[in-house]
Length: 426
Image 1: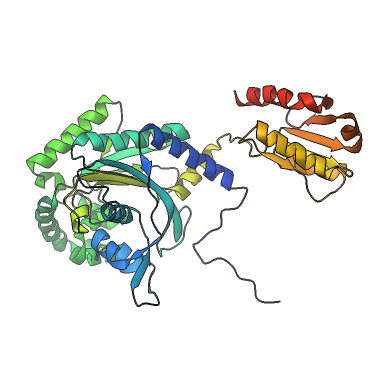
Image 2: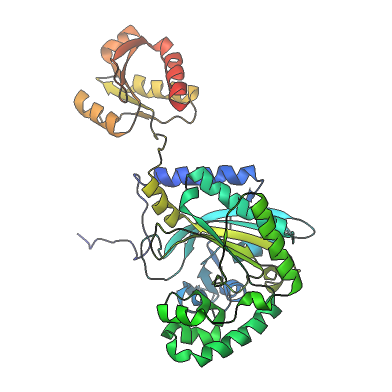
């Protein structure tokens, strides 16, 4: 026998006992996105490497250390997408979705970063992202935050997350702030951690995101970005805060909040939780008005967010939401009645589209079939034997309630099930 092949480190399988929670989460999110009129876009997982170098920024940790990049057989440099926004912008621009139009888009799928794997953070991870284009007012910033707040409500997580807000101003604001911050940090460089000293020369705003205790102490007296914001950026942020307050959305101003991607400006926000330890961000986003032009299009205002599904799954597992059973009916076949059992299953699927119905295959004793029926999570076992077929009946055994097994004419079975399945879903 050959050596067993195992999965690549940091790229995890999602097993059948785990997928119901993933599907439940994805369905809830799709429902909220549809309620806000957002349309799905699907992009390839492979893109030209330059898309991410130009979009994310060459002096970011993602581009410098984390991307999965390789040359294909034609010698072209390709990269597995590390995030979704640049791909969404590329697709929208390439297919003419941004010309004199507004767009509300969303996407879902795997992303790839070569990081140290840890709980809720893997090298292949999954995101759902929201991107809007063509609207430059604070009202669309407020809408995407309100949308995210409604997601937490739909998922039962509202009391587990906190909204943090900041404004990064425009590129000129950040350039002036960068000079002041660098001058200050250089005076205290001996107190900074090694990673922050490296960032000081290449991407100093990322020092604000340091978790090192010594660096955090230095930052307490550092210049604040809000002191360098121009009038338009101040007014935009003030109006956004007023809109959120009018909608009853609580938030915390965080002057140290920056994003790890170069394309953000003005509004940035994160939803964080204390339930997942140090890695507490479950959703992050903001405004990126310069990215479309940076990638070759016309200047286009844009704002969006992305959320990591693995971290949300960890949060949901702590809440243990009650999920609908994937299987409602399990048909057991005793004796030479397999064709009749399969035919019954098909008739019931016609009557109850979307209801999980399993017809037992592979034979086995009555006891073993009942064990499998119980393990499936089904509400009812429908038992079909040679005697039942001869009489035109089906035995119905409730599996999730204290009730007796009974014999029903097959002609009455569907109506009987309809009443009870409807009652269980009410």
